[in-house]
Image 1: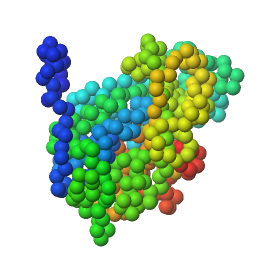
Image 2: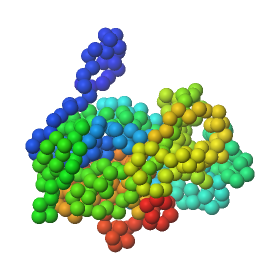
Image 3: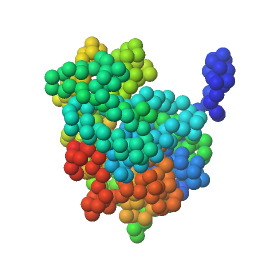
Image 4: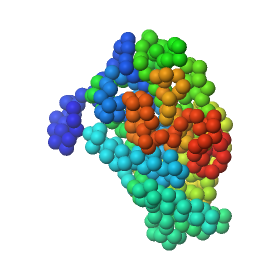
Length: 417
């Protein structure tokens, strides 16, 4: 079933009775070539690219709940490629290019909106740092524009430019950045993978990983044993727990990141805006709600909710940057379990156990990485060679200290990223 304007018109005139299921609700087979643990954005994207680019379709995506029920549906939907460190810069640039053609690739409306990402600066030092980052972005082939105070004012005149503590000096504009609809991204990848023969198995929790003589043999699940030649762990904040089933200890801590949305409002915010003197970012959804978030809770947790002191901290940053938000009523909040690596950068690599692959450590960058991560992991599984755009996402950098990518320059400590 392909979507088209004509099909939508026909269904609208006939009571929408002709739509079918978006994907097959498969039952597990005894064996597969590849089992992907985790039915979120990264796992589903990997299945799509395995089938499309490499012709590997004897694949199962195993999800303990429902597809898209984890972090891919619990984020602030921001897409960007404004990274400065070698390794991250190439990868997120590659991912953004995939985002720009994703709707045509999937024949699915993921509501990609390249409305621009504006990072505010509040000091001379911060402006200099943004100039360096912008130059790095442009050297990579991505767009970046350094704005002065009046340039920012023309874009977002309602900000507090004269805040005594945090005056706005200017900003770095990444025009190709923006937002996408997180649920639609998961559904689009799921639909495409299923259409190409991949089995999407919901309500099937992995309870064990079978390893024999240093090689993976399959997985144990609540719906029976499944043999597999290759297994990929793609479970975000649960990475440490699932890897432990294979006897691995990962350099990952799991932290909660909160997000918030207001009541629906008339269009008032055309861009994604970030506050440079606090970890705060905000955009307006297509339904009208102001969607925003801030810092981690700063202690390890698996609770899909945040603490009230951090909620207060986020609201303070919102009011410091954008006082008008004080007139909006908060509709709801939620939390996502983030897999935090020591240097704030991801891992896409072989695990040391033959046939077992890792995709984790995404910190704040998980959603914007979805297509790039899926493409890179599929390439690794299919060829046993790293994708050129993800060649630096090695697991051994934490053991050797070589190749660390400390994007925020805050030191190798999980809860600082």
